[in-house]
Structure formats: structure tokens, C-alpha cells
Length: 363
Ligand code: SAM
Image (cartoon, rainbow, N blue to C red):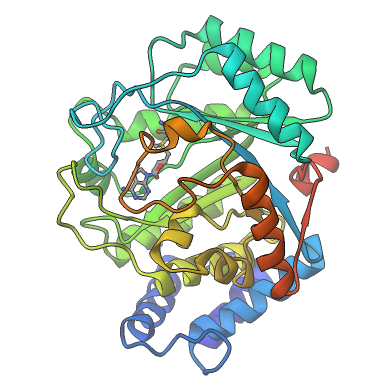
């Protein structure tokens, strides 16, 4: 199996069957508890994570990029079965931040050294293409040295173009799963796998630094789903990949489903780093939620980005994609301080750079 990891490092791709053997074997070890603690064993995860760590050190050094996350609306027209923001969740107190509040979040973040802001939200029809365009323009005018990432779901090509022209730099749209049948088990009938894929293609075509991604251990996911995810990532060549464990949320149809595993998520992170050496790879809040110190482990497995929350504290409670989300009450200043300290402990440095994809510099 190690040979397959070596092959992935060399060729940056594997065949379907090779991916399947590698993932099956690695996941079996994870289930059997052979993969942790991370450094102290001869598991595939330990082998992959060491390679991933070395590759990220070659490309990015020990830098950890920070992104200021602004969760600007929790209204959503979609009913994804896994997500706490889903339309059908009557328990959630809905909110939207107005332009002034969003700008205040940016201002606070900028003072703390953030050079990337991420506007994330449910698919909220209130924020029309034009309203968003205006918000993007104002942010980019006020902070021309900062990058702006959008994570607002599926839109048509015209809308994406408008936002790109307004100055948005990056777009995160997790594909969630590259298996159509699996997609249909995670989403209601009015959501379309083909459209999600089309959106990612369009974002790439428009020149966004584009992020896809998945939840590890989402309900009904099997090894073939993950093989397809890896083949899809291999083909799309995204600049960013968002990977975190699935975590149940108490007022969704998946409330009783099992959470995704820490080790499995770390294994996938490492394999993605080996396949795409220059990818921007967040160590997600979900990873830190599944285990204390999970985000540090993510960094040790090849991740190079963290996304502290800049949203106003009053609204954090209402942005619960899943239960027990960490950092709900942490002021941005506090969280950046403790993050820097924790990263320093494992030999990494939180930096104030924009942290663009190295691929952009080559263009
Ligand atoms: N609405 C936008 C979209 O669809 O891309 C962005 C916001 S959406 C809430 C961001 C991501 O959160 C989703 O792509 C999904 O992968 C993740 N997410 C939602 N519910 C989750 C859960 N229960 N556990 C882990 N991740 C979850």
C-alpha cells in the first residue's frame, strides 16, 4: 500500500482500483485504531501524513494562512438533509447581517491582520446578485490588499461573472459527493448533482480560485463514493479543497447518524495534499469539533489554512451547521491568539499573508 502512496506522490494520480485499495486499507486501519497517535505507528495514515507534511513544508514552509469567516446569513432556501441551516429547520433563529455590520466584521478582522475575508451563508434569496455585487465592491474598495472568498452556493454563470468582475477572488463550493446516487441521498429532489458540478466548472472557467470539498463519513457514503471524490478532485484541479467530518445536527433528518471519523478525515487530507501539492487546504472547524486539537492534527497532515470566525458573537449560536461547534463564544482577537500559540507549539506559524494559491502567481 505504501507503494501506492509513493505512486500518488510521483504521478499525482491513481487509477480507480488503486484508489479503492488504498482507501479500503487505510480506512480499515483507522477503524481498528491503528492510526493514532499520529507519529507513533507504522500505519498508512502515519506514512501518508509524513509525506503530506513534507510536501506542504516544501511548498508553503511552516506558514499557516488565516481567513476571517463572516457568516452573514443563516437563511437558506435549500433543505440539505445534513445541514442545520436547512429550510425545514424551524428551531433556528434566522438572521442576516446588513452591509454595515459585514463591513464592521471586515474592519475588526483587518485590524487583527486578516488579509482574506470569507463571506459564507445559506442560499438566501434576499441577497440578490446585485446586492452581493455591491457588498463585494465596497469590501474590495476598502480593503484592496485583501482577498475576498465567497461561499454562497449555486448561482448561474451570469451571477458568478458579475461577482468576479466586482472583485471576488475565490469561491468555495463543496461538491459534497462525486457520486450522483449518494448526492441524491443527501439532498431533496429539487437539488441537482449535475447543477452543482456545472457550477464548479463555471467557477473554474471564470478564473476564481475554486474550492470543492466533501464531508468525510456523511450518511450512506461508502469507499466507492470517496474513490469518485478523489478522481473528481484529480480532474478538477481545484485551488482549494474543504474537507471535514460529517457531524450530526439535532434538528435535521440525519440527527441520529454517526459522525465521520477523525482518522479517516486526516487520511483524506494527507492524500489530497500529496495529490495536489500547492492546494489551499483548510483544517476545518468540524475537525476541531470532532476532537480537541483536531485542527492541529489537520495541519500535521498537510493542511495549511484555518478559518477563525469574525461573525458577531450574538449570531454565532444561530449558525449551527452541526452540534457542539467550537469557538462559539471566542472573540476573534482571542481565537487568533490561542490559535497562534497552539500552532507554534507544533512548529507552525500563523501569518498575515493573503495566502493566494501559488498557481495564480504562475498565470
Ligand atoms: N450554502 C453554501 C453552500 O452550499 O456551499 C455555503 C454554506 S454551507 C452551510 C457550507 C458547508 O457546510 C457545506 O458545503 C457542507 O459541506 C458543510 N456542512 C453542512 N452541514 C454539515 C454537517 N452536519 N457536518 C459537517 N459539515 C456540514
